[in-house]
Every structure is written in C-alpha cells, then in structure tokens.
Image (tube, rainbow, N blue to C red; front, side):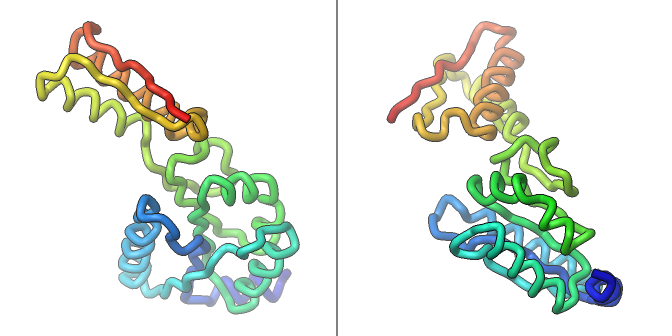
Length: 184
C-alpha cells in the first residue's frame, strides 16, 4: 500500500476507467474523455484509458485496480454505465483501497449523493426544466414525456421528467403540465 501511495505522488498520469461505447446513445463517454484529456494535458498529465473488466466481479475489479496502481496513477476517473455504477457503489471499499483520488463522471444514472468519491454529474432535472421552458417559448401547450418501462424508474428519467414538469409549469404560469407515457 505504501509503494502504491508513493508511486501515485509522482505519477504524471490519470486513469479513466470506462466501457468503450457499444451504443450510439453512449456518445458522452468519448466527449467526456476528450475534454478530460485536454484539461489533463494542459496540467502536465497524461490520461490512460482502461476498460472495466468484461466480467465484472469483485476479484476482476481488484485485479484491474491493482494493475493501475502498480503503474503509478495520480487519480482514477470512473465513467460507469448504470450496472457498473451499482457495482462500484457496492464495492467502493476496493476502489478506495487502491486509489485515494477518485472521481466519478455520473451520467445521471445515480443520485450524486450516493457516491463516496468526488462527482462530476449531468443535471437531468435542470435539463428537463430548460426543455420545458423552451417548449412553452415555442408556443406548445400539450406535452408528453415518453419513456420505456424498463428505465422509467432510473434516476435520470425521474429527474428529467420532474424538471420538465417544473419548467413547463414555471414558464406557463402553471397552466401546462406534461403527461407521462410509458411503453414496454
């Protein structure tokens, strides 16, 4: 542990752990990584990209984290999908055992306050509110929020819908509200 700590003090690299995009909707990984690399480079750091283990188990995560720590790492940036986020939350002790400087890029899948690490997060509530205000500014009066049943209870969906309804009511003097349509 002491050796890992000393290496981290002098390492000029950060490790970003994510899953390479499998779906076009996950474009934010690439955008987040590009911005991270630009900012890190201007501060004299390199960003090493690491994939989450394909078969994510406590042991496979520990092996990946040990390998990263042995290379020397000034910080670990996690960019998890929904399943990986839940797994990382459940096994945060392993992450913290190997890394002291941990940040999470939260795409809105998890309430930010659940993370025991530094969090950069999207704002699904604020995004929804801005959309609601824009819709009213465009003169629309009937709005529905359409969502698949399998993600309807996801944090980002609940917050984005809540923000949309708030933005609509705020911009319309409480005369317009959104209807939630679920499909399965």
